[in-house]
Length: 478
Image (cartoon, rainbow, N blue to C red):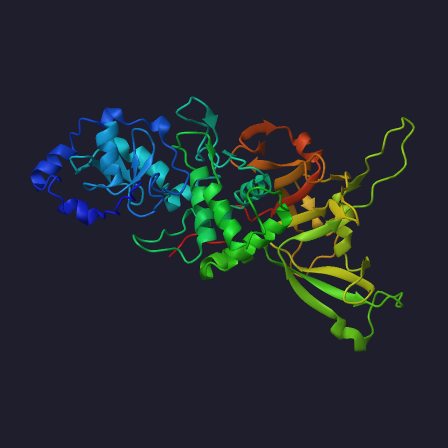
């Protein structure tokens, strides 16, 4: 099959078949007779626009009648041929949202098509972003073209095959207001320009689609963002195999820090804390180090804190069933009290103590629920009991000077259900505007009771410090 020639918009404009009289083109554009053929239910604009025939991303137009993408709009182009063969006449430029009627070639000016442009490239003002979590002003439940209802910011994400591990992280970052706001307001590259940080650009575009209150459907496909992640990570995070949410979060936060000065500042002020690590030799029973060992203590930054779960019991109870132990979160946090010694094997056998030196605004806790032995991966089913509100760190940890009584509220909790490598990840998310908890599992999003959140096998949690909800970080671009 002969490959279609790429035809630019300038070539199309010079074509003899294009209406050349400005006054005629304008009059036709404002009274296009084919607007009633536009079929919004056939449009799927979540994917990168590529011509369905040539597979080229250049000069791509979406047929607003059948939803397919075609290249060019001048005579001889793929879109031009499609308009003649299928008798579909309304096409939208996938980059700038301009609409043309083919094969006549005139531009269509009609505000009834603005909703399609907003789905193609959602845009938000600073005022709209500032009200996303405000009670009474936040976007409420919306209705898609199929009649289904969805809540902006809590829409379902397609599981492409084994991408639930990444979807729950995107949902969790959506609960981090300063970072979310910075991504929603992130500038777009101009025509013909490419973004220097494609992973961040794709993540920003995905979040803009998730918060769109004018969407045609109540779910979004993360295909383009995750495909970009797979390429940028060198295949570490794939679409067809399960990954570790904690590793993916750490990698993604590192990618965000590389995206210019402003995004780096927002990411670090949201997540970065500091912990003092003190080495204790194995033959030293005292925790305090001698003066000549001061060099063994160092302060290290962190974006998430890893907590070890106690090993589950191997003995059955009176009913001949395995006991599922429970452990309070405060007990696990004692790892960072500066007294508890944690064994280490590298670079040399010994012990270390950990003391928090700086607390982040958003505290991310990772429960090490999976461990690998010589034969297979084991899962620890221990239930961690934790408060959804008012986690008082000062009650279980010595805090850095000047911090005071640091209190945190839970905003996102990621849990795992099933066997290692075979189970699925779910996210429990707080909708700040109404105070309701929701569970997100692939395309399914529904409300849950707080008690259900507390009983889940939590793997990763995000806490927000009380008092920082309405203040702190400027998330706008200048």
